[in-house]
Length: 404
Image (cartoon, rainbow, N blue to C red; front, side):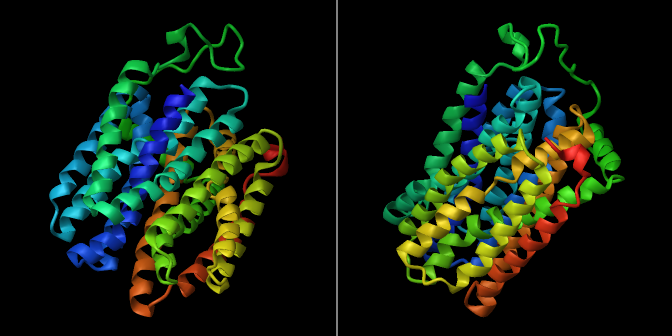
């Protein structure tokens, strides 16, 4: 179950990061502006987050397997449809709207639902592993996709992405169990007489909205939402979407720049899994404080490095370890605040904040780059938000509620 979920999240995140690879080729081949491409990427990121809480609610009614199969088919067919695009609005429709809906159903809420359904013990560690796949997928595929775009044009990575998602769908249909009981098991760490939460027949739209309305009356929801907004602002939206373009401004080619992103993805796998292990043992608030504070400092420093291979390697290792390490402690705090049944849905709304932040950064960075000719102010602004998020994080909950 963990392996299949990891693979689905890996592929979905790779799809969501592909517009970053397509940005320069589409600009050079079709003459589109970087701001218009960034807007479409931002729309996809926004929908990626908005769909999350509703997909979490649907998983409680339709089931995880059906949701995954439908989402993967939508992603594959919409990316295939984009092969014939000639106008920016077509890129917006396929890579912004349709893949936004598809990838939104195969996002961190999927990991949260699987963890809460299949695990009682070691939830932080497993969520760390699954969360790592979202960043690892978005970064690990980039060198190969960038190489395809460089040698064969922008359609080659699109075809690769479409084929991967369409191949994965039947694997999910054949091998993904819905519940531990389907394999004669109880959740890991549960007693033999464990009674799982039953499916609800409530309308998924109503379930998602009701959970949101209840959460908005709690201060911790807004703090978690705000810190995750910054998480998206500083990762997927800025570095994930624009890092290749940032490197291009300093004379670094697409393929080596994508290689640095892939390195971040590999180190994210280590950093986020380690973060999950730490979350099972230490105060989640102080983990978030350290993650956001260090991330903010590194972004403020980035415009002033020399962009040599050595400095980019150091930045890539450091940023990779911290990329999505915020997810396990954020989910733990959500479980504590909102309860086992509601937490995946409310966590979906918190992830929506992550994607709003990412969408804002993807669009704003493109606009500032076009207006100023560089990314310096954007990187410094993002770094400042990271420092602010660090101090918000230690205000979440109270020591006796969040201590290990």
